[in-house]
Image 1 (cartoon, rainbow, N blue to C red):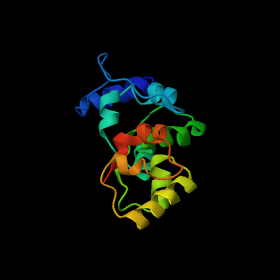
Image 2 (image 1 turned 180 degrees about the horizontal axis):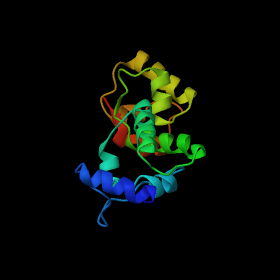
Image 3 (image 1 turned 45 degrees about the vertical axis):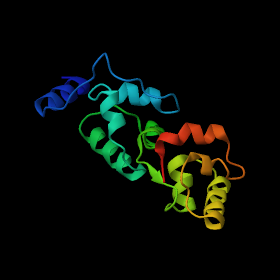
Image 4 (image 1 turned 90 degrees about the horizontal axis):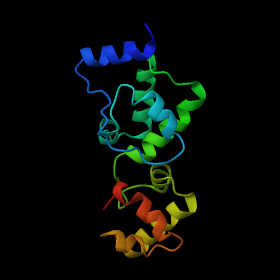
Length: 152
């Protein structure tokens, strides 16, 4: 029996929902095609999007799925984990996060993360996205791309 069919049968037996045609669309980005090919065989995009896992949690989840028969080449692992963490990671509290956490979680440069810390230190806690827009060197486009992943 092919691995894909075995995976679907296993998940159906466990009561895990499988891909539905009326599912949400995965966001564009490097790793999307591999996620669609390997993950949506057994899981809906909506289920994936609801997970909100950290990079390490996505890595662990992917490892488990591969052990359970998900078809993914080793050279696809890092792009898939990065894609999932970037698009479906937990919200990041910019009033508590370190520069390293900001850079890793939001995929912003170290200079942008440092600028956020500097602004926060000089001006106090961020209240909203308007405050974040005041950070020198941080573009409105970057903020808009990550607004759903940011908390205050």
